Image (cartoon, rainbow, N blue to C red; front, side, top):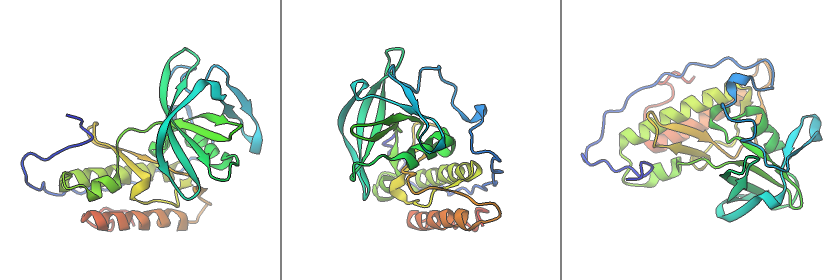
Length: 245
């Protein structure tokens, strides 16, 4: 059975457990440390045609379309469309990716730079690179189901929803610890991988994310309030009980 489609064979709701999220200190530098970057081979996140771009003051890996193939849409939003695709890496391996193209046709440097600096922190997709003609960002394909699916599908019992919510709390705390606020947090922008134990969370669609200014908790509180709305719809305990405020 696909573990991302779990059915509770017992037909009973499990007791809701509480999780207390500990605030993670923010990094003093926006540059990811080596410990925050997944251990991969040197070629795992670049294509065989990669170069760099210094647009905006920070290098971003450049990819060419001859190493990409698109297989279908995975989502359409207000600002752009995301495609499921495949990327050929330096070593000849082929990996699944998401290719995001803005409706305007312009480059999506801001979101690419946020992903580049997060380097997977908080479950953010890993950035493979950016393309031109047309402009696109190429990122990790995150497996799992959205919180929206868990919210609306009858097969997800309360203990599945609780574990998904707990994973989201942990991911958001890490996201903030990296110095960023998401600012567009809703159930459709959260992917839960239910094949892991405990569940793991990916926070996606980071195009509206902003750096958190020093001594200003408004940005973090905005995200936690959004998450509180999600937990209300999941019929779980209040974030006040979870130590989020």
